[in-house]
Length: 199
Image (tube, rainbow, N blue to C red; front, side, top):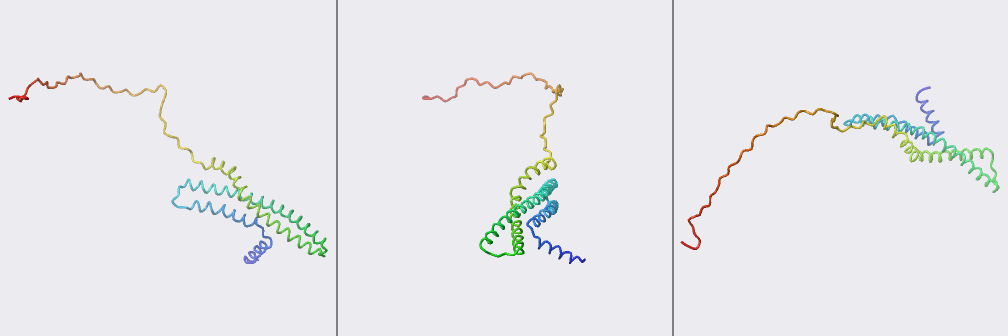
């Protein structure tokens, strides 16, 4: 079997059994591989910051993929049950109205209803997982893991080196000098040759 035939068969199977779960799982897998890779390839960034961001992105997608899978499967099963009940109620109305429907048509109608119910509610479940479930799980799981693995150690501030019974270095004493008296010029009372009000 050639590569072309293999690709055609895969595409045909995916087209005939298309589910919302398949593309979202493919996207999540691609994000888990390429986003950390592109983050690490960024130039001019701090290496520690790149490692932290890449690790966080990888762990997020590891949490997201099984969450998408579980919610997609549960949504599809719930959608199938709802679709079958709705189909049976609709079929009962048509039979009561006097319509004649063969068993083959009934089975085809049921299969079409199941497919629509699985696709619709499966998509709603996946959207709910992306908007509510995965962010909640990431806050519960990813954040504590990153605190243990990727958190940089806090730098301790410089502390004073205080030791008990420490001997301080001797202080050099400055020799005291005797006080010297400052002699200021003394001014005697003197009179000028000018007199006020007379010659």
